[in-house]
Image (cartoon, rainbow, N blue to C red; front, side, top):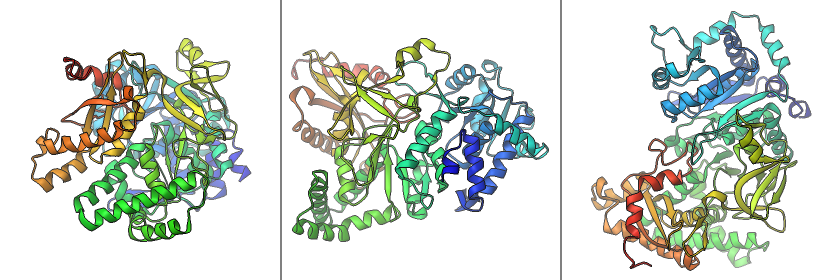
Length: 599
């Protein structure tokens, strides 16, 4: 496939893919209760029409086109259309507030916005006076208000494109260069204003070539894509889908992930750790509710799986007795889990945050491989990935081909590769602080093992230093607690400049609701119920027994509401906005330290 992977730009990559496999399935998308497929040739027709439509609207090379939408096949078509027109794409999360949208659109200078539906159009309309550069809005779903002549439906954009000369599209594609800006992704940021990360065509094509060289993905794979395409990890998968030619089913509805996997039977699915935690916790909560023989069998199978996983991690072949036990556990327990996930998964890919060890070991023992990866938006996402068959739980694998890594004296991970960003948009001083002599300062603390595999231990800026001068890695402790209790969805460990650590805990709404129904507990009383607190306390105590004394969580509170993006507690990529959560719950956190009984 050299003719594909040697493409110098993303539009040329797509053009070569269409030429190589025009009749193969490119993607499928939800259409009522079923799925509709698009071949590469048909997808190429759609992209060309939309691209020429943008040209008809006056979009010039190097201008910005924004996409404000959840994950759907039209997102990919709009992205490719803008790139084919020689423009760069500004990705905007659909959960972004109106004020944040205005900031991103104004800072990026976007002139056209693809808005998913009437709700997103209304958001843009509310800040129109603050975004004078936006000339047109294209509404992807539904019909826009006919009284607003600045908004046109997606079908009308395609119609405008069909009225243009197709050669104009080819000329625009030919004029794109590898060093041209392809994407502006605004980092969600756990503090302060988001920064626009400038990523070129060459930046994105680098991880695509690297992953192709590793042969992690194949053209015969069935790929299920639900990740936000506004996130760098989703974008890498979009480019990889074109590079490999694999069929991709696209549906961004999080609530349908499990049902879609059972229906689509994919071979490759990428997800954030929270999804794997959710699957794990749902299974554990279900068998706990069943109790009796089922619970005993599950616990036995899990122990067998853990022993098998440990043997593999240590490079040992499981003993004959253990192999027999695992075969029985597989037939009675693990095979059923794999069937619920479609039964054909070759690999899950996990990224964006560390995967808790207990969760990773559970899946490994169940015969489900999770390849952990690591990268930043600033490095085009894919910088490290676990090689198939070489998993070392707790690491994110070795660098992808062409990436160099160095650990600074303070433990910070430094990366150098062709994927490192061009810079932060309009922020030369910030860029100079982040990329020094070609090395990207990631802000993550990590270490390399004897085989060059990277282990991320925490964020440099998020390390807690207690009043006793001891350092605590909060994400490590938070991950342990989440893995220890199936009802917990999120945890924030607090203790910076305090004399001990405490935690704020939120409950998984689906799993805790099932628990409440079985006991007749009103939904609003679950977080304060003594039995639920006892379950969380049991988990916290179990975690504390494995930690150094200064790392232990002395007390905790169960919050009535889950952390959400909408409340400002989570970034759009589901990371904790630690400072925002601490500020919002300042009085509660302070109350833990109001007496000296824990000191």
